[in-house]
Length: 202
Image (cartoon, rainbow, N blue to C red; front, top):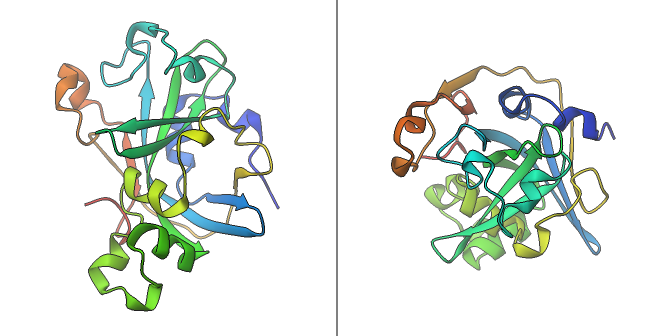
């Protein structure tokens, strides 16, 4: 199965963010499962990053997961309605994580479509299909990720990542999105995505 180990996440956050591209995210719930390919990520490093919830290593009940061991899920709510999935990186105490910004559906697509649009996949138009998982809130809705996943072990058996295929891809590096409040951190080139992938967030 080639599941990613804890050592994979226990490294420099930006290296992990880049190397997560192309990896497969597996979610198992009861007798159902889904597989999707990670196509876009962003790194957040709390000690120096004004865009991070844990900037200057500020510990709160919400950010406590970020200070824990690497390889755990950090899930939070934005705008009071959308969940975002992050994976904790680096050694315990470092308060760093990678945001999963977009994924490409591989299996379990019918369930994704019903969760996201309350329609079957064959009822979707082209725009709805391309928007199915093309953003952090969208992918969490489609994959059924919510607050109950916060703190879950991403090296466990319910939600985890595998190495996926050996397909080559070109990585694009850019500034992160929707962090206008973050002053100089707005310009950090900590967003990474697979070039020309249709599911990269618009």
